[in-house]
Image (cartoon, rainbow, N blue to C red; front, side):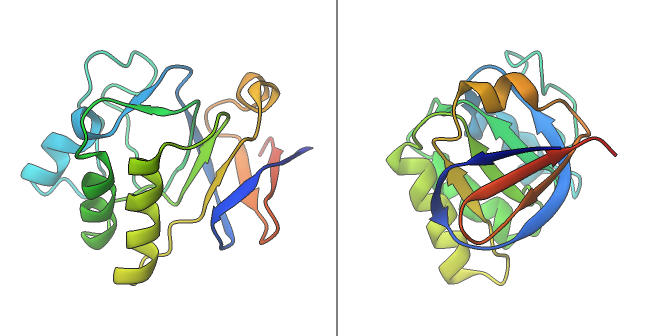
Length: 148
């Protein structure tokens, strides 16, 4: 098990299997089809993300460097959360952008689905974590990663 310390953007605790993207996460492209067609698994529809394309995102600890793409990213995160198809938590190796932060914060405030979000976990975090490793978030920004 390894521990990483990041900055708490949205507080909360969570435990979930990791889903890892080594490249920027395009929120709109990734969630578009699942939100339009009520896919409760939130299957990633971003053909340009080779790490996530056609993978289920709902209920996962989504690990990524940063978000990219449309200015609708925050609203897409909020919609996914309000529909109950969001990841369990968002973990960023780099600083979070304002749009993703807004979506995570609005999800926490306006829905019953807490979306714990931690950023600034560092490149070492993204190098270490692999798909399906168990990720546990503690209230103080500590992220524990362990193999099942």
